[in-house]
Length: 117
Image (cartoon, rainbow, N blue to C red; front, side, top):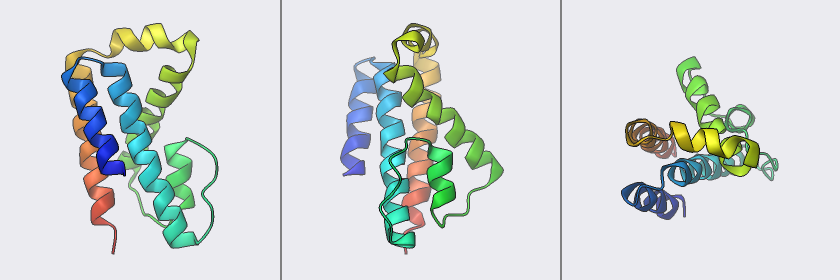
């Protein structure tokens, strides 16, 4: 399912809908991290969207750099969902900014998938 969501993010990117592209990117990582919690901890994942907390709840070992990245991607969830943040987020979601972060989201997604054993 996450792979299909990643394709949706890419379609949004191609259409220039940058903020929603990054929001869907957040959802992709959230779903994979929750899958690791189910697999590794045998519990229902918490009903949270914080990627760092989800990574901490799983048995994944993430570097400080990866944690920093996940913390940044958390902004894409908050800033897309809440009206107070939307306008400022739209402004920073340039093509270059979105390209950078979509590439990083795909890279992290691929790393997560490589951790499945």
